[in-house]
Amino acid sequence: MAQENKSRLKAVIVDDEQNGIEFLQYSLERNCPEVEVCGTFNLPLEALESIPELKPDILFVDVEMPRMNGFELVERLSYPGLHIIFTTAYNEFALKAFRVSATDYLLKPIDTEELKQAVQKVIALTREDNTPVQELLDYIRGQKNIKKISVSTDKGIYFLEPDEIIYLQSEGSYTHFFLSGDRKILSSRPIGEYEEMLGERGFFRIHHSSIINVQHLNKYIRQDGGYVEMSNGSTLTVSRRKKDEFLGFLSK
Image (cartoon, rainbow, N blue to C red):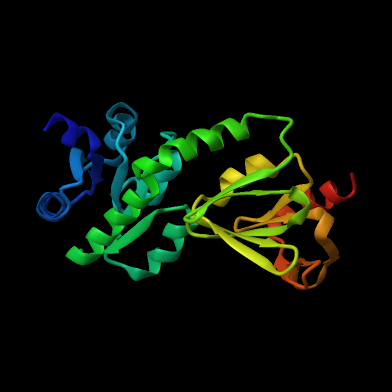
């Protein structure tokens, strides 16, 4: 029994409505035996202070809360490796949820099947047979002299030469790699991790959702706020707040 508990995922629930917490906790206990609720909070600030100590694997967090909403809570968290699942009564928040690299979001009233699917998605991202892979990735990231970039996918790890990467584009917590030769692969990791790996290798994040390899830049067009054309013919928007920094980067 101790071994079974050890392998369970720990979860924290944050919702200003107590009945929302109780319903979700009951649904998890009844339908998701892989998950153990280790903490519940009505006040986001209390959750913010307690999460590093509780060390959960999953944070279920309501979007609409007074004083500090769910997005603000997540933005202030510094606890690494946490899978975020937003809960909301409003579908309009779905896109923003993925922009902050949420693992998933659930519409209220929470559907049991959708809850189970969200939990299974977390399990797939943290399954035990990925542990050696993660150790390998951490090792590779620490090696300054290694030229290739490691890209984790559901099929395994690709080791890419930076020169063959044209650009990266985020989709929620996933990252699309667009490669020379009209190739494309999908990574199960967020684009922010690759920004750190590629930042000193001639890559630039021109938008919150796009990182380009400047070696594959055909031209920068000033019209319509600014966008770039890449070697494969793709055009990508340069965000207004990145424009001056990007032009300075190109002039170096």
